[in-house]
Image (cartoon, rainbow, N blue to C red):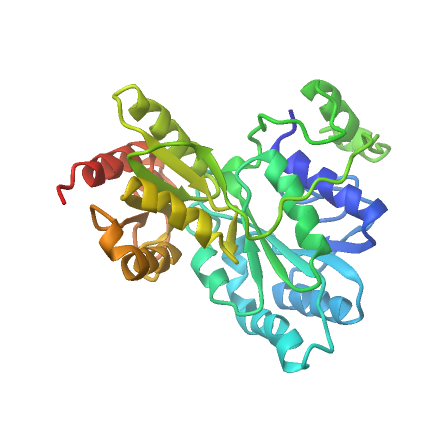
Amino acid sequence: MASLTQAIRMALHYAEDNMQLRDVFGQDVGAPLGGVFTATQGLKTAWNTPLDERGIIGMATGIAMTGDRCVAEIQFADYIFNTIDLLKIAGNTHWVSNGNYTLPMVVMTPVGAGIRGSVYHSHSFDAWATRLAGWKVVMPSNALDAYGLMLSAIEDPNPVLYLKPKALMRVRGEDLIPGEPEDAKELKNMIDAPVVERERAKWKPKWPKLERYMVPIGQAKTTRAGRDITVVTYGRHVLMCNKVADDLAAEGKSVEVIDMRSLYPYDWQTIKASIQRTRRAVFVNEDTEVTNFGEHLAYRVTQELFYEIDAPPRVLAGKNLPGIGLHPNLEEHSVPQTSDIAICVREVLNEVP
């Protein structure tokens, strides 16, 4: 099974050959590295830029305004904040041009903690991203969704932010990508460059015969069915919430887990229908707890489902800190862990109406 990194790489290759993807670029995106997480390794359209985030976003906007499809990468989300004004311009271009311009551009960037990246490599961008009007925002939690969401993002006629959870980049999926060989070692030999630099200089990938597979933007997925409480999450915390649901099932507690996959537009109908069944809700992510996107969802639950719930909706998020420390204890106490999710879910289950 492919890792999330390999899935993104294969999606970009498929788009090069079948979806008129013309440019994939960013810091270290081209040869020889192929991206910090090797997600752009071996791509024929990948090229390197200077260390200039504003230049990368400006270039992507210009390419997209000509009608060409491109994927630009900001090496880590921690360094995307100085491009906010440019992202805003890209997001409103279709609207302010009265529909005369579309911008078929994707900006992908690794987000979140989980790799011991300390202060400068552990930021989340979820809430900031959802405030950028005109942008769609997606975040996969597994390899198959990573592949399908990337193809949908590239096909979209307007800007899409593709947020890659750093902690999941090496995690292998449970489902085969259409066209992927079943043997993970075979796939590695086909599309992963050699580690030794002198061997890498001569290396070329041998791509499998990949097929078109799309995950519609705006469509959530129920990863665990349950009747007692709904847990809504995305990215790396999908795996944690699934584990909590499995553990609590042994205690007779039935937890439904929803992977949003798309933060905006989001699948309110799936979330709403689930909460109407279970009558309890917890929203989990690792962005900071103040002005967290989960707060918007909790607010909407309170506004629309107030008389249909048996407990106040809860948001479990990262601590409101300037950064995340390098030491494992600092990181693990800064963002929700499996034990935190289990405690929060039990507390909401124990609420008496």
